[in-house]
Length: 288
Length: 194
Image: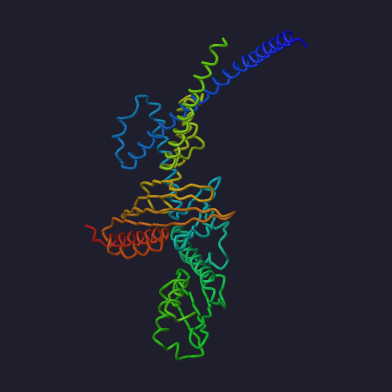
């Protein structure tokens, strides 16, 4: 209403505003400081812990290196005076080394033997692999009481477990039995894997027949000229091997089979895993 | 009071920034360390680590004895594997080359001996997870043997390296060493006793 009055009021309002603002920020600043201090403390603790861990890692690494070189005395001199910490660190280094060695035993296809509770027996794992790919793992549980007996297992029924146990004298030589079993299982999974590759990589070739043990395979090829079909039978009579012992061809055109080309194919199939042999045969133009 | 606060805030903020950078750098370093060694920090070894970092209230002796117990169990386990596998391993170093959600690639170097034959194998082990299935694969296999009858082995070794058949190498080593041992025993049996 009045110019002077409104100015006065406006001034008063702005003074009040400033006071209110400063009142708001002052307690805010105090909260802020508390929070910031707490945050800084937490970060300090985190940093110190990470630094301590990094130090320990360094020491453990050195200890591991000296353990592997088998010259333990070199590093001991550089260790801290505190005997308790030194002992603890050496134990920790040994712990990591043992874990790594056990892992290695597992990776290289070891039997991963585990004692069953109450020492009644042992559990064993048989790993299989083919061309660098780890395939199925089979397990057995053997009771060690008076006579060694296989109590549980997941070995497929077409692997003659009982016969193998007898043949390799499982009672007196369990390791020979395991080695033989491993041989059979690896050969089986190897053949199975080859069949899988044939189906995946060679769709122009029909798989006419195969059995669960993958010890017999009948394939049908198409010859490029004349569109003749060749039936190929592969027999794997040696169940410890991944390569066939017998290769037979059947074709209406018998002259074809007498050719040097097909005699070569016969040896190829005996010496090379089937999926690879087929690739070669395709390259050579023998089959489509 | 109100004059010190903005100063303190500035100082604290600067400190926090600095600490955050330090922590980030240390965490990166930790990641690198974990690639070089497989630290299985579970159970007793984790307790020991925390104790050493001042995080555990337990007595040093107790931590030591618990870890000792676990180490003894591992030693027994190793002995059992050595006996059953007839392979004596001297060292195994692993280095993680790649580690993402679904893929893990490690470089392993394993050395040891089987009977009188010393070996060193190096290979890459990759593990691929596809849904529920997980496939492990070996690549770049390199086998070195220190044996007197190296000639017998050389073509076998190159075949094994080409087919990446790590397991076949060890199966064959075992069989060969068993037969050598048998021959040795048989030979000694027929030695004239004087």
